[in-house]
Image (cartoon, rainbow, N blue to C red; front, side):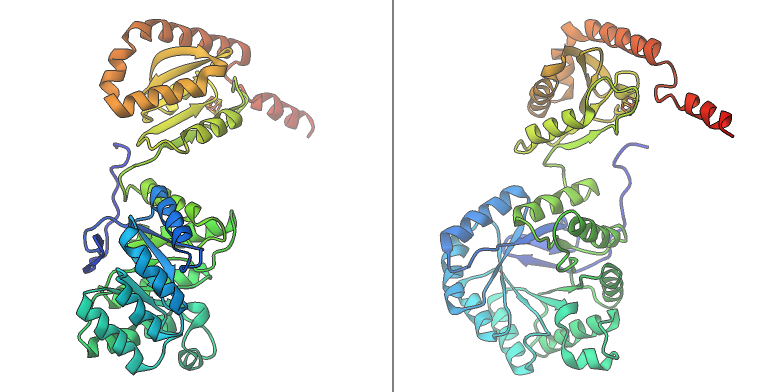
Length: 410
Ligand code: SF4
């Protein structure tokens, strides 16, 4: 089967517009992140918004927790490269001010603003302006009445009921530009809450594991929750809530969607072998060097770093380009075909240079470029392959010797 041919079915949801970015329906799943600056610090916040957009964020949220923040939003929104969502905490007046400031979406937490007349006032104003609202239910700040109703526990049912209550208030003023999140820091709870929510609503869903924490566990938890739901077809927009630079959140959200085939590849997908007794080079180091070299280059390619030429080009034949180590030299291959041979210390630079060439001119042009070196490259690869096999045999990891020792020790 062709790599990337598998597609997950997607739950049918309505489409809303957050500024010029569609969310839900058949639109691409989007990446969101949130600034960590004071929103009143206009230049600092804009700087972070630009960094987030460059890292892959389609939509950025800023807190609107004080009157100065709303004023900041009025200055930020016209200069932002991506739509801005205002995060509203306890005071509904900040929501009205954020709308006046021109934000593209609001996020309300039903656990924090609970007076129906205030919720309806915000929804009416948002309706007049055509601005959507995210109902952001959070397991940690659930409405106390619902917490009591469900036996003093946060349950998926309680979180879904909180979202539905809020939708009912919105419906009273005929407002339906809604997206919903039911985040929790507990992964199974979050997954089940979204599953139940997806059964009872067709509003677009914003996925996230809240307060997932620092790397690496925070990334694992976020991925476990978000990826599970995406594989079930649930979710229209995602956010990784990590205790780290939000630029990493945006980058990792983007990587997740690209690895699922849910967004077009924008960045290098670096694959590398795990190394073994046959490796001719420090694979970890070369892979790290390659990762650093490609970090700031937006090349939509799969690139492979392989420890030996015996298995490398074949195992990574689906990669657009790769390099496999030989006898103190690197064997460059394109779609599994050896095209050039370079000294070991030039492996990463060569990989980058050819990856840029392929991005600009395509694989076919790169093969034409390699015409003069292909024969030499194939012969050199065969020499190194044979030498590796002669030196290390079929059992490069000496497994059979270990098995023999184990048998003798019985
Ligand atoms: S056989 Fe070669 S490509 Fe495969 S893990 Fe070992 S060194 Fe890497």
